[in-house]
Image (cartoon, rainbow, N blue to C red; front, side):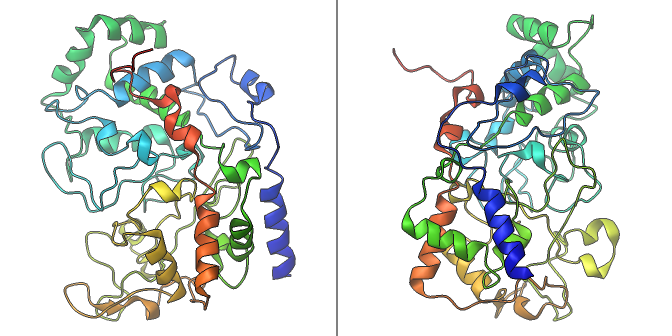
Length: 385
């Protein structure tokens, strides 16, 4: 049964691979003419969910793109969303842990925004945060830790920066044409969500069906019961925590992968206990949402705390069935964490098999995505023609 299921999943992924590269016009028409969100034929994606109270328009996405890259959207004018989400790194920052605008070090790694529109839940650990518009208030206004640092004391000052700017006057008016005073924090969030929702990555070598012999072997290993990767990273988005416009029963899954085992009782560091932070159920200790593996080559370092530097080390970590930290504040054998997922049981693999698996993961890199001018910084100096 498991073998048949594996084969079926592999076939479903393979059907996404088509020979030509263009966009699906029929699905674009379902967005009332908006061209901001584009899906490639070779990727074969369906539309992500879009909330009724924030329909996607080109004007909102364009406003959101400007706000995303503008440091004026922070309390002290020092950081933008881009500070932790850079296009060249698939909208991550290359750091183990990011710093907020006031210098605070955050406890969780900056997640990729690749295909974030399809997330079944948001942040690494929160099962009840299921709307992007709700999540966006956290980096904007959160105070523990401070990220962009907008608070009750400076909110109007921050918004006034945009009210005073002629370009933003036009952008807000176009995005919210029915409103006399459109420069509000709620509209900022709606615009940011609209832009981020357009960050679709579906033009990789995998999507085009252009896999090397090594990557083909790696694909077989990825979808095998030997390595078990597909159990947590399945479907077109390579994350089992994925929803589309067609999803009727969302699966919001979280897994403990054996990264820690403090006090040999399954504990994780107190600052990052995973889903347990919401449920207070020990079965959820150390359980985190499986991120998409698309563009994984570009999003090092890895894990929710950025504690594993390279993709090769990630493979060794899963081959060992978790991590044994022999000394220090986080000492403990994660391999025997009582709450660890059964899918992280370890495996034996030759060096060639490990390289094949890495080459398959590299085939998920979408170079068009990280160079797409639709997602680029509108304030960056343009190269000479």
